[in-house]
Length: 307
Image (cartoon, rainbow, N blue to C red):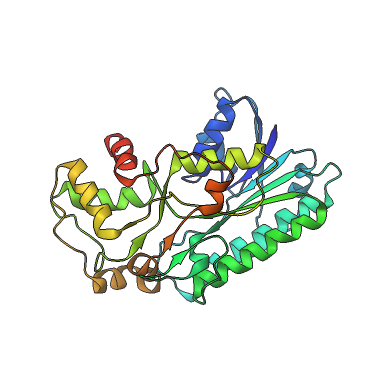
């Protein structure tokens, strides 16, 4: 296949590129930073990869490159886990809403249209709760991230007018060598690890390998369509995650990080970590996707030794 990818230099995108490259697919990387992409993907190791510079929120010549691609994977978006100043909130929304709009615009204009768009979203769609269970057909929340996800998905749904199959993946907290775990492990190494906040909040996660495999299956399998929760089937409470992490690292998990410390560090965005949500991938399992890492301990045992 020939596949266009945005967000290809990120934590998830880089692993997706690696796996698709190993399978021999032709890849088109759309990036704001071509120099960085060239460092990550040297032509010697990635002979079937083309890099095109683009401005995600603006129309341009780059859109013509979408014509002739079999599929598009849209992962681009400003990072969430930072202090939410008004400027950063605007960037979080626009990078997803306008960025997706321009990808859909490119697909609609293409002479030879891609047959599938795999578009990222997030479990932030559901809002936060300590007690509710969220499935793919659950209603949206009302907080900032829920509004961002709704706007993001609304733009992606427009691609159906071009006759392109759409898969929207509501992604949970991605665990791998980097990402969220890279921030959690250092305190454990110093014997200062423990749950964030009260520890009772739900942590809906997915191993990076499972997420990338789900993206690849979404590209290839024409029967997969619509909204899928990209989370492992066994979410855990924060305290359980930290206990498992401590056990694998042979470190205690007794020193909780108080709410106020995270609020000082992250401001409003701390809500994502402190409140959480319990998300189940019912539709993902119903389409026959098989998880390599369905349990948190199994996932951590695979990842932690690499870090």
